Length: 339
Image (cartoon, helix red, strand yellow):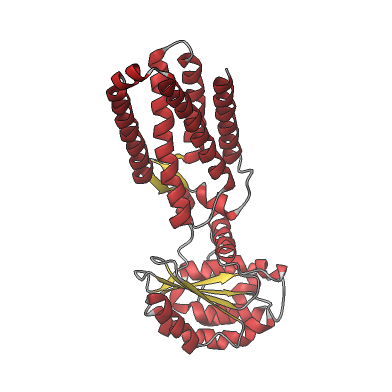
């Protein structure tokens, strides 16, 4: 009875955590990143809900049916393999831990431990003669479990991919887009130190753009900076060739107003023969969320900051403040993360 109660409780906890994941109750960057992953297009959290509901039904039927008892065992160990795959994704791809996802994995492994303990206990309580006779059937069961575990891991790992909708952020990347090296330039439109570093940054971009992706990221240390971010995103998407000049024009506009209108922006960029083209609200919102994720990922709390990162090795170097940020320093950082 205790085993059945613990298994039921574990499955109910797993179901509750999966529902919490769908409702996005975690609220951390790691959870947000985890929610971007799906198995063959189906979000992990939805798969989790379906699994725990079906597993709960099968568990109840297993009480009076040997077939359903075997099916429940296979389901749990297949899920163990799948959860291992997602643990590895969190460890090596997301590089942060989603608490809800870890909790779901824990419930699956706890349920597997309960089932395993019961099977092992039943085997050890048999008389020695019966144990010898049942060795081969046990080995066959273990082989099946290993196969199911491996299949669960393979299907989850190979099927795991980021949702296309979540990945559809504005094309704001400049420089060498085929490079695995990234240079994130994080600034605030009303930051005095950023103004001071701006000239050095502008001079540096052409050189680093030959070797790496270059991404300008708005970090709203001053809340008024958010008023400029939609315009900045639009220029990054539509006017990459003239972006540095347009950026300079926006910087000049910040000295005149904290709440620029579309007319103000258009007047500032007219000498550059550019017509402002606003992004859709959805695309601009995704760009702002992307900026927020970058700042949180690299724990940026001050501007200006330059982060030089290697996508493949995940090796990163941070340069903070006007004293650290220079063309020579950024190029050295690129050499360092390239090794």
